[in-house]
Image (cartoon, rainbow, N blue to C red):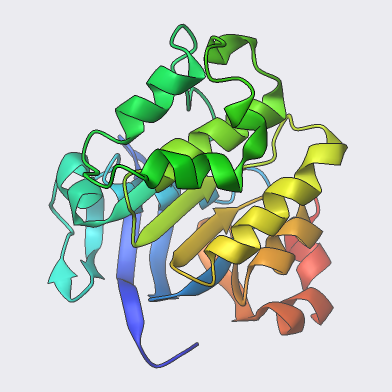
Length: 233
């Protein structure tokens, strides 16, 4: 990994009630570039992302973001500090129009041109501004969710399964946008689509039963003989 780290996760345990999911997890995220978090279902990927954004409390360990301890900070504080999050589900306001969804995302962004830049990134949204978000296709909803998160001007963007339920013809479009975004900010992508994740990412972590089982440069992880063992159902 690059020497300059933006998010440092050290010896973290986390879970749900009495059910521990993460065990002594150590992860470093650079200030710019893509990082993939891989693993089979139930490996702890979503739990890790929720712990980063503050939706789950840590039971052990600590996190530092941009040099500041965020281990006990609330989600809203983390968002204001520059952590954006696109969850796997329920990531748009279905009854609101595309325009209003973007307006919600822009509440903390005083840059008047920010929405125009998002529409330039995802031109399909510009054609759907007055359409209720719930009537969009799966791919368009994902674009809207990502666009809304970008409007918060994040320094770190967390994406949980950004292509789930997306038609294959749209996946490449989303992938290209994420590759471009990762040249500007830190992007952490949790994704079952292995090729997509490793196209976006410069570095990858593979979780197995809540522990980091494999890590390294994206190309090295892709070619590691152990990878398929950790991804197999």
